Length: 448
Image (cartoon, rainbow, N blue to C red):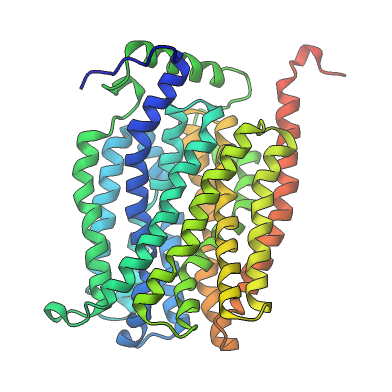
């Protein structure tokens, strides 16, 4: 398809960003929606799977958390591979393998098989989320990335909402074709990933230089703009991409990021169980769980947009990460102490929005100091270390529930982790901002 000329009166920069956004972001968002449903489907399958396989809450939590261990071990190598072979081939490979493993989860026979398949699912999906974040550094100038990450992450909120409705409905298929409801959850959510792999191979370009829907002028503008950003003196491309793992800035961001996935996955996986405790049916549970993720989608749209409009520099940028995290921590804590199921549910809606909305601006930061293969490895390292928070959450939340016999008390643990993480994040982001300011001053004019 030939590229479409940009409208009269629209400058080249705006036209290029608009074209890339319309052509790229819907596809990436759809892929993430499928990925997130496949990651979260176990939270609905759990409602029947635990009893069917004779699992305790703690044993289930360990199995669910093994996803993150596989993710952690394979994410950096996967992203380095992506940088070398291109997004089109690597994303298709990721989707085929995670789709197959998800379908196999529908035939789980016991605890050991559940553990192995959850680990393999993490290994199969490793590299997709950080791969998209790296790919966005090849398509968008820095000023636009937080908004694009926000749009991309809206798919996770939609996935939670769609997964809630679909998961509850699929459980109702219990007995169809001799399969239990929890088996249908895995079968019906794994198949789309396999089918979309073929679409990726046909539709997704490896980069702007191979995009048939960009004009030569648009490709040249994008190449010049991104090259100028990389050559501003603040970006690093280590000779060995794995050297990025020792970059002080990467290590700091990885350390403080843990609290966000910990709270997000802890809440996302446990929310259906909390709502089930309100005394609703599986179908009603699914539809009620649409609400918090729609609120989250709104926050993911508004926060990075507000950050871009206010300049997203200095303390303004920092507070667009720390502020939502503190709101999320408050919502989690209040859901435990305030009376009434409706009030508790409203607090959890606010908590979900705050926890997820802190991430788009955060993820715009690694691209400000890394490029090339180092950016691929650094982003993957931050995400893989941070996602160990998901491993912690999936073991700690059911353990606390087993000890206290309360579905809501684990929210206090998530709130404490998120509040501490927000405080540390403020310190680290402020330090990174000062470091960037020092690097921006030429050596010749720096004070002795």
